[in-house]
Length: 169
Length: 409
Image (cartoon, rainbow over all chains, first blue to last red; front, side, top):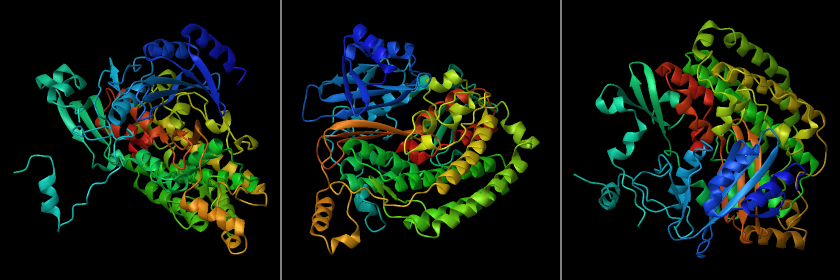
């Protein structure tokens, strides 16, 4: 582990009671869902000003935990990176929002809601962001099939149009 | 499905001010088909006369499900998907992906391949900045800039075509090295660029830098402070234009960037004009790196010899039994990456381009996430555009340098 990162990780470990793991040079802490706001505040106070990435992994068909939400922080002043992982159950996965601490978490959380169906409590504007507003399901879940939409040409336009869900004249 | 979310007008009312609901301000739709939104970006503008009260970006029109598609393909087949993300920085995308796979399976890269990677990514950075310069100057009504920039860009795309056979969708960098070695004409073509392009940048500067129209349209517009930038996850030239010296090539070097001598240009103003100056200086620095790399280009192999992950040379398949077996195994079932996850980030022309790659031990990426810089940079648009004129909003969108393929993935 990086010498500069050592005291930071030790402090977080002590105050939050989380477990530390290191794989291929990437240090990540496993944080329970109820402590994530405190953890993010702590991480920000320790100089990690940039929320680099925020994503999730679906371990379906495992149910508990089914999802891992991953936060990837960068410290510009100290030149360090740190990851947080939050395990979530498959039934009604939800997390408190951190968009008031890191402003760019706003769209990132909307993307996770859109793609994985993870709800963020307290989020100011939790709508779908990449998929259309009336889309059903959450595409990046592992139980969501990878399908395709049949292209509409002139010869089969009416046939496909009949099957489309929107209102027709 | 239980999670269908109904969207009604009431759900959207919190996005606009009270005055819009009472009818005092006007809601105007800008895009998705609008020449100065640089792609299919839709903005919902709340206007008080010519003044932008609030700006609500609506993205997703170019969403192609690249992450889901890559998860359904083996590691080699997923390579071609990367070019479709940020179509102005195709070499940088595949570099980020290759670095992630190399870290995951612990693969070595020969020194010659490293140097060629640097040359091509820097040329691609230059060409991406040329597209930005041309289109954002076009937004400010400097029509001729667009033509000059695209003339120069074509020269760089010719080099990419010379190496890979494709102008844009190159897939030239592969995990473990390159697809094949550069042709013999490569060095002369790059030298030609190194000779002519510095003068061309001087010409752009002569046209724009002290141009009163340009200064009027850009100086003091769309300001972001360093704290706001970091809070919004803004990286790349926008962050450096706000005074934060953060460049992944310098601070967290990859592909041997620590061996090159180059400056990281910064400005403190944080406005559209500062971003213009930073990007122009970055173009000069890119040429500097390319020159150094070309002078030290070593001879040798361009692909790793680890045939468990890298396909053998075509010529060897006819004479070597081992090569035939490796080739067959790699192209039928792929390779099994060990269990684990990595996060690698490279400096794209727009900022931090990160790849989160997770493997469950199989031949396909279990989860791949692209941290694309435009997605976060665009989030700061509502903050920057508060209280500006609609015409200035166009200049601000140009200065963010968004690529919608990068935003929507």
